[in-house]
Image (cartoon, rainbow, N blue to C red):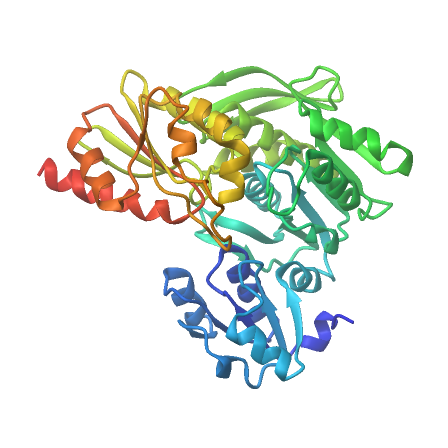
Length: 463
């Protein structure tokens, strides 16, 4: 049986893998509840430094003694069962919870809004939090990436609303039992856990069925997977609100303008024009993300003008089309995209951003299973670039699959290059870049570490 939030006050929670985006947010919120926080991670980082400054005690290595004295242990799904701290916790018969279970406790006393979907969760969660802040609602939030304006991925607000990014990767998002939920889209991914598209659909139905009966579901009318979900739960009696380009959507957007680093669209709510969504981030996909946040805020009876003003102040999240530097007219962007659909919409926006310059992409596939399942689609998406370099696969927690390498992607490309060595890639990109080019590092692994190195290399080259 899970402990209540009040029962954890004054207790000690130990987080295994505390430096991760989701785990660090939980630790940050736990500290505000007068819960003692300890944790461990294999890498030091600015995230860990910030948590230490807030009062957490963190070890930058996994060791069995780190767990001693804890009342509860929380672990991320990246932590294997043979981790020494998990083994020690079992020996001590300590209660252990997944990240999702722990988050469900921390937001149990709030009005929970869960943001789910195969793509766009982090950005949409961030947009909703910023929009609600503009309405003086001061929501709590736990998001998988830092909101650029605040530099934080978690906050304990004074308002009743808690915005949570709901990760579907292992089906654990059924733990949240939200008052309301957004589903941006549904597509086959996380093939290590979901063998078929039907399995993904079933997981989202299970999630939607946990929404409180007095609450509501916001879904994208333009996405076939989200529409299937709406049909599948239509007999539940749960109120549904649609958004999208579709003229039949409850929140309809049109008159779309897509610029290099911004976008705008007219917003029509139940047939009435309520204003213009003006974003400081590019891409039609981000207008749709903003539309979902706007629809949710309107359903929560927030003022339309303040919601739109908040969306206008949104400047993005970390690793989502994040400009890392500009050197001699060469712009370096870092992005988290790691599914073919995400790559396609991201490179579409990047092509617009590049203008007359070239688009040079350095992509790192994430997981062997995803690479095997989507190799052909990765090839097609990456061929949108003028030059695409593919690194070797970032394994995450997976074991290698025989015959599965990044060459599965480059062998099907017309402009693909397989270069597994980080130093060779960086040197090649820095040497070949010309003013006007856009260089993008892309993927969910450690490829993001290359962006600042490329910026530094360009600075030396053009000094």
